[in-house]
Amino acid sequence: QVQLVESGGGLVQAGASLRLSCAASGRTFDTYAMGWFRQAPGKEREFVAAIRWYASTTNYADSVKGRFTISRDNAKNTIYLQMNSLKAEDTAVYYCAARRVGADEYGYWGQGTQVTVSS
Image (tube, rainbow, N blue to C red):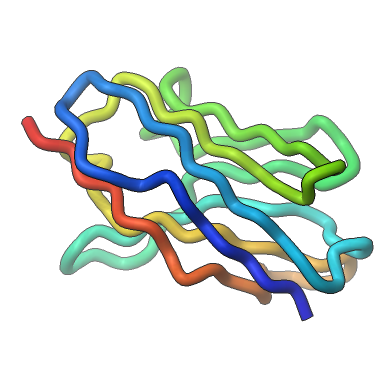
């Protein structure tokens, strides 16, 4: 089992920045990748960004490319999402997720952290 705890959400104005953190604990040694997803009110959950746990490979949704940066600190078992130039449409609950080696999907999820961007 892997436990994930997000933090860093809040209320900001458009154009501001926020950094989300996700601390992982438990069985992390066979983590293949970790990612961030978000779900806005009335919408389905969508992919935001992901990072390989033991490599530098990252990928992003087109809607956040150039504004968001995902990073990790393996020593702290923590990933981050630096969000710059925030827009009202970035308002959502942001979830951290982990995917184990050999798994097709993200099987572990955090409780989510609210990000609200006022225009």
